Length: 183
Image (tube, rainbow, N blue to C red; front, top):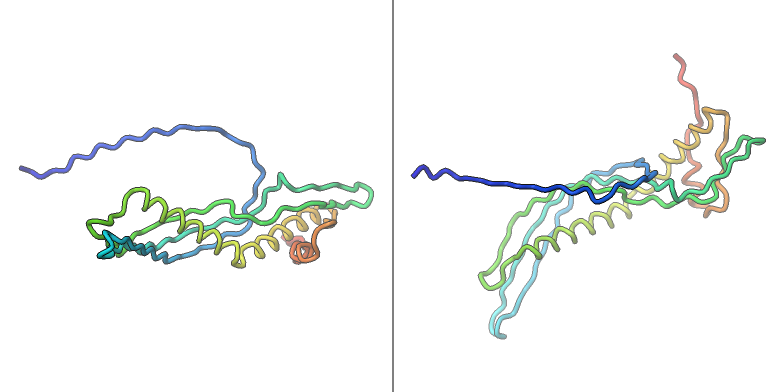
């Protein structure tokens, strides 16, 4: 008679594996996406039933580099770090928050769990693609170039980029020269 709701929740967490990585996040972007899903299903050739959902997703996209794929040599005599191979900037993580709005479905064409999963996966893929075509990779290249040059300069070393495409060398080399902060 109280109309009290009883909720029982259970969760099991399994650790599958731990891996050692050397990935560094150097830029983050914050995105909002409005994803509109519409589908139409024809029944018996007489009538169409539509279903649609509007999803608003907000995401923090972290872009960085897998330093495990970088090849570097050092020249002790000239005090140079020679970067022979440098990975492309990549999306290292996407932290998303989804909200469904305006869900319309007919009784013959309802959303199921798989539909919702597919919509969220597609929205996440679109978000990742947009992040990679935004300025985030350029910002990441400048940040990592600045970081590497300043670290090397703090120990009186130089960084030299070899055998990389010219645009990549230019992006990685654009930095503010290292200057010690006066105390």
